[in-house]
Image (cartoon, rainbow, N blue to C red):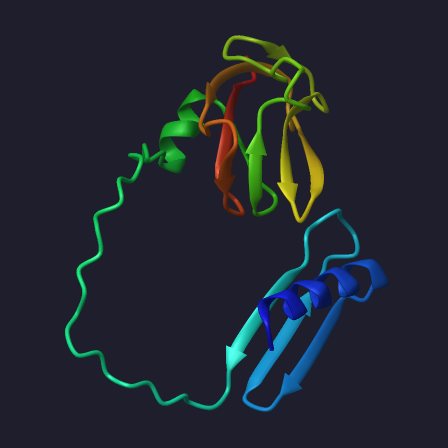
Length: 161
């Protein structure tokens, strides 16, 4: 099964309203799960059922080192002391602006009310607005604009005082 076929299947399942679909084709098993209650991108799990024979490589090839941006670890205790941490509810691309020609939703030091938009996360061409879960002041913005985010990744710290 080609990647394009899998992507089309994911889109079809998302539009159909089904909560879970499993498909087995030979030695490949695909399970697609969606959450009907929220606007969440579908998740696909592909599992190889039968082993595939792979020819051993003659010599290992050294790959060039890819520079990785340093990640500042934020332990739950650190952010809890600073305020409330807003985490990503989905996997996608983080954007601080509603569109390229508009200003950022929030900046450090801005006062927000519960329900105010903080950012958008794009997942499968759907833009999901992330709202403040509590009122307060933005203390930290933990993610750079236009970068990928993971589920439950901290995005903002809000001081409720």
